[in-house]
Image (cartoon, rainbow, N blue to C red; front, side, top):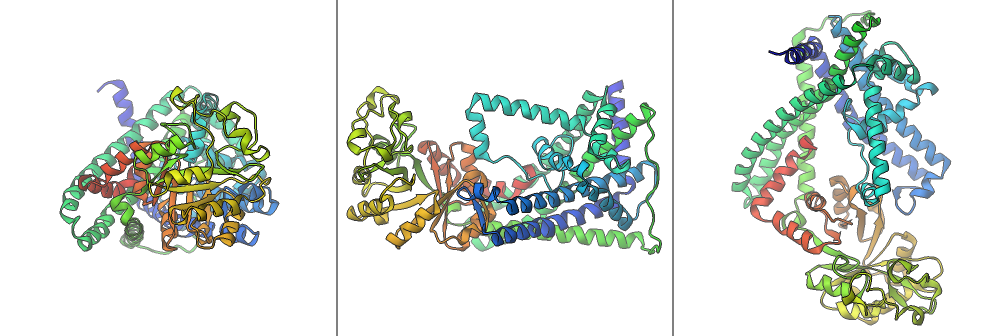
Length: 615
């Protein structure tokens, strides 16, 4: 064996020793911590946050009220308090495991209660002013890098897809984001030992990161190599296990698709096995990462002749004589209970999403008409949507100064016409003959801004319309005139009226109580499903199985926007949305048709069962 292989083997043995020495207490703590986090802290924290926001006049957060909520001092205080609770609970896992590994390093056995108590005492120091930056480190840097450190509790934090789409669409923003990500990655490695100094030496944030920077000096690339290496080993083992389970599930599911009861029973029982694998993996991942970091903390400290705090944890004054078999029994019971809860969640959520949309696929809406094939919001775009077989076409409407309802996304039409004109301050005669198609292609040079009536006449009996009302505050009768045109053309049952502005939808309800309404939002937090609307049009990044289940339980629909990639389309199908807005109807249709074939349906069920394991 060469020198590098010998070093890897030696490091692996030391890391395994750290894990093995107090393994039962390690596993027991992680089981309790994860169970408390997922069943008490996380849902309880959100419950209290939502209740507090409701008391402040914000029962839900959406695109229309987010800015207002964030400029409310009491809402900001509530959000900051919530962030501190989440950060503290995430830090509690780090401090407790670091203390446990410290005892294992010095070959000392631990008692669970004193360990947790001391971990709590160290973690609560985050409330000191000099430790506030740890909140940013825990809630932003760690989740975004997920490289050197991970946490069972905060690993789900991520950047919304619509924000990432906005960033990647701009070379400037994309470059800036890449640079920032690289910087955060470097900081996460340079500051990798800061939690050890915070926990073992009571250093405040700035002392801890300074000491971490000095300790890792000269060991930067070695540290990265070993962290990647050990994480790859875990990932490979997980993938092998998942592949084996997926193969078993694939063949069994093929025999059960025509037997709903048997399928449900299989999902419930097999979900228990999947949940068990996921739970064990979840419990050990954070421990392994911190064990790797702890091993290097001791190794580098020794090579640099730096003292490491050897003081043992205090034992309970009234030691309770608990046999090891009892500890094992309690630990196994706790883990099995957690696995059962996970299994129930898998089955319950699956039951809610295994509906008509799961089996037949969602409806498809052409965004601004067939906007990838013709100029957006034009009659040509609507014809393309019809030709491609879309179920709906989404259009935007505004009102001119002389009261005409026209189809246009922007109230200022310079982007599509080259003329710096606002629709609300222009008569229809001023804009109706403007060329808005030449920029897309010479064959569209005669395309103009159509009226809503023209759009309805073209679509009547051919395709339904999702009509977004875009008020500016200058209109005389946007809602009333739009409803009147719809009713005059006998189109009420073939359309939905939508808006980002909820008061506009309330006005629709007063003018036309039976007209279907859709609330558009980029953000969906809280009891948003209680709003008196028929459809929720949500940015796809914020759509989760929980949101879909809550909305479906109210007998309402979920519409996802704007879904253009195959990956996003597949995700929305698995979650069970009712309708997808897309710029590419053909690609979306192909993806949907592929995924509802029997073989692909089996794979979708498999993907659903194993989604958490490989996410």
